[in-house]
Length: 43
Length: 201
Picture 1 (cartoon, each protein chain N blue to C red):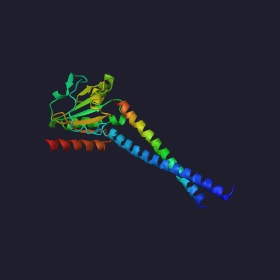
Picture 2: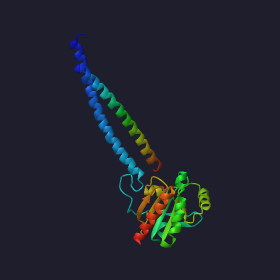
Picture 3: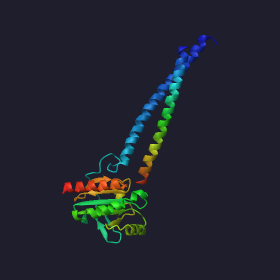
Picture 4: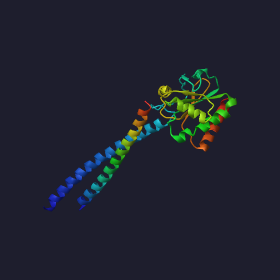
């Protein structure tokens, strides 16, 4: 029974972190685009 | 399947999920670190006083430009003798609310007339006629020089406009500030200038 609970806990935790990482990476791309736009327009 | 096999399979699945979790945690830490660095860099780029490398522009000499004045002769910065100079760097394609600043520019010209403060506009718009029209319709009395090649923006590495640049008598940058569009903020800025100028003189 313990192994089943451990499996479920790890699964939920991994999915949660996976969604978080995807969100952060999307933010990184957005900020990088903004920075590039500023740098290109005033080069 | 007996109980032992199920236990082994679940154990293996837990091990895989655990190592994936550890990998994701490391990814999360790295991503958070890089987003924090990027945000810091974006803040530097949004701050008109800072250069892209993070060092300050304050205390640096301004380029001694010679540009043709709208409706006048070429104007050289070092030929303008005054205790303080306020350079207004703008483009007519800047946002409409940004250009509402012209009221403040006129206010500065009027208020500091007797205190040896020169206001010089630097316009980067390509169409000279538009600048003449802008100057006439808004009754702007201070000189506006024309910089269609954005020479000053490139040389001084400015990244945004309109900008107000305060220079002292040695043409060293004392202050750089961004758009002030609301009347209250404009009044505050003029008060700030007045205090700074009175303190120095």
